[in-house]
Image (tube, rainbow over all chains, first blue to last red; front, side, top):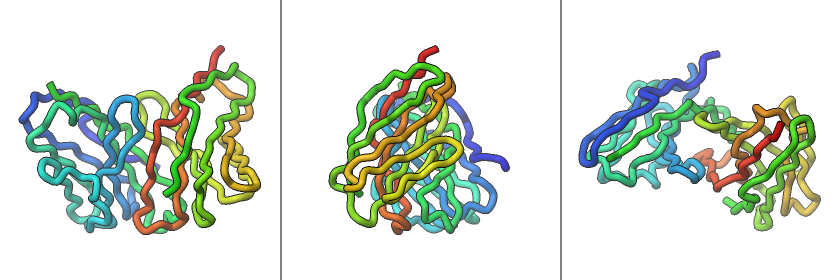
Length: 115
Length: 112
């Protein structure tokens, strides 16, 4: 079974530029998550989708971050404009609809450096 | 969700058991204990979870104290590949958002 795919793996941009990350979850997984992980900290949930609907985006800085999951499969996370403090690893995870257990499957992440 | 406390780092000799403690003194009756780990440059990986009984799978064992205020993750025969940050998380079973709240975890360094 293929895992969660993310691209790009690395991205370097200047502040005030925009950037987009792509995630392809495990086939059949209805729930998709985006996390931000700053160096030395644990991952922090930014947004959770159930199919193509948003379940939780309480931690998403909506003035600059946006995310969509068209057709309930792939997802993109965008930052516009980027700030220095957005430098982090952006992790995508997915879980089946029936995953009451809290078991989530994570991708390798995209490491963003804002200069 | 309840807060957890873990030591920032631990060492373990290769081939020996690694015992990673976690304190969750404010855990509620309907909250489970989950363990994830994150190997360098990879995403977190689910290990095991439990409510009040001890649990074992192919990766590890989870020992939860009778009062449920603390738990220990046991890797029975640690290898160099087990070097990672281990996260202890408590959350409500079947919570609406299935949210995982990660702390800073324990960096386990397995020494040859």
